[in-house]
Length: 135
Image 1: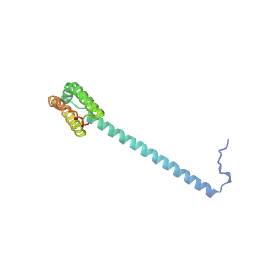
Image 2: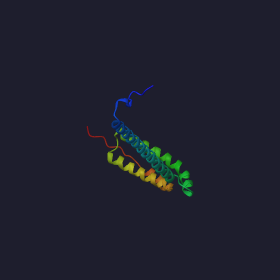
Image 3: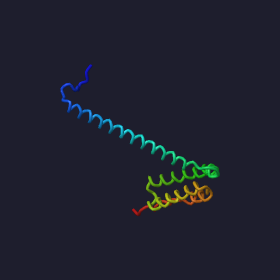
Image 4: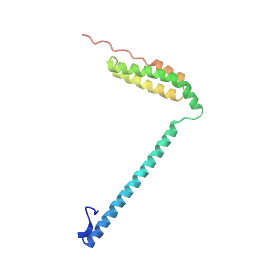
């Protein structure tokens, strides 16, 4: 069976040009494949190095395990409080922003192993509703 495009009716010069183009195309795809493989390998190395940074070692693991359930429970309560107040639009935006920033401080303290400080920050987050506008 013959290919749909066969070289019977082209001159030797045209055949050489076709072969040259075929080599260029094959070379291009080979280089493209190497670039893709290289980028994939580099990306995997970066992902693994980032995962290694996330896994704490030694005493930090014990501190994180002790404090994380307490912090997690308070965090969920505060996040729910902030979300509900934001949806209901009962609290000024500035107060919501301040509550969010305090939440971030509490998370940082908890991640650093300062559980008591983090719990105090969580307990200090209060959202007072706006006074109703005069009708």
